[in-house]
Length: 292
Image (tube, rainbow, N blue to C red; front, side):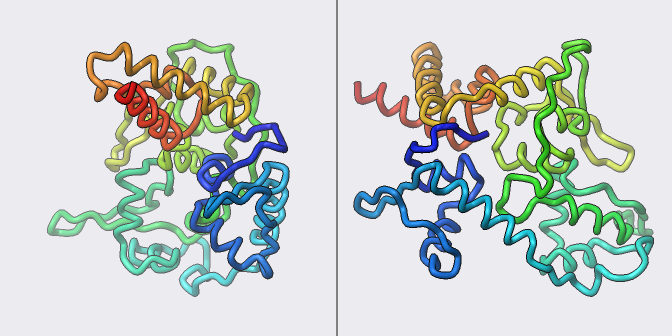
């Protein structure tokens, strides 16, 4: 979700929220600007640099296109027949991880982000052993957004919200993804896990498969409301103001500040920003109330 004012000045945090580029990576690109062609900031105040949206957006688009076009060298474990089975250790090594803890974390804490194993065996000691076909892993790699990139390599235009259904009908992430403009449920689950869509941080129902893996379900009305809000989003400065107003009102009405959470505000105001943006609004509003 991006703003429309090309002359609006954005700092590193705002660029991160809007374009998914971390402040540290932005600093690296600027430091190596002779090679990366990162543009000079449009405004510098002390150590703070700010770029106009019309300056930074074209650069990031061209930079990511060039990065995507670069030929990649795949691990030797990612070669061979597509039906070859890969263990958890094999998959982790092929994806560049020294240990299996990252892959296990995806399976346990980010349901739907990584595909379920194609084969599951139980050892005599009761330990589960998971295996994936090489083709399953390769297909996931082809769909996976780049590291640190919240946008898909094949981003699709958000489909019109599907309202010809029961508002209370439960949708899985495969059904919700195209409604929210994501090309796959993997991309949507990644966005939810990263706090980009705090509106969906709390599912309406969690379904557990026979293999013990979980899948989130959301009521259609929530998905439709979020899809509509994302299509009608105002500029980032207007969103910032709306978040502050909503957070301040919630804090004044709450019995205790702890009762005001990112999830509650995001669900009440869909399409108004990421978890990080809402957390900042709550902190600033609370500080203003305490000082006032």
